[in-house]
Amino acid sequence: MSEQPSPTSDRPSPVGGQPPPGSGQPPPAGGDQPLPANGPSAAGRPSPSSGRPVVGSYPTYEGAQGAVDFLSDNGFPVEHTAIIGSDLRMVETVLGRLTRGRAALAGAGSGAWFGLLIGLLLSLFAAGTHNAVVLLLSGLAYGAVFGAVFGFIGHAFTGGRRDFTSRSQIVASRYDVVADPEVAGDARNLLVKLAWRVS
Image (cartoon, rainbow, N blue to C red):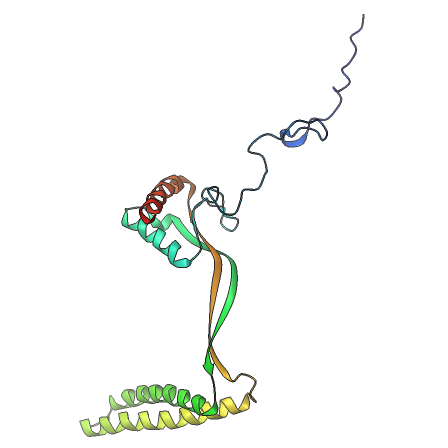
């Protein structure tokens, strides 16, 4: 009697070891399921931008900097680490209102420093001490005057489109400390000690 072939012998095996749809079998653990971005699984996941494992994740740059400093204080080779900021955004902090008078005053300050530098360079070639002092004071005065004029004119040309002063900085929502795979375990163990100490 000839042997009958199995009905499922011609079916292709599922890709990556996953069970076929509708089989009722759960997918194997450790598959392509994404890891959470935060929490206990955050340390150890590979960083998307560098491919190196994350050994610590912090909400501020100071926290990540403190972690690397702790590693350095404990003799860890920090040249194998990096700090990577994620979800970068630009934050502009408004410092105050800018008027033509304030623009002229700021220009005078910048111009005075520049004039003082020019006067200092020229005083090196002065014949006497009196001439050197005169050159320094002249450079300071002329620099302040021209700086004030340029500051006033520069602000007037804006037409009032930016009547405020501000300071800009780039910040991230999360800072990951990554390390090379061969030293990632040691770095992670040290940062666990740091977390215990802080808590």
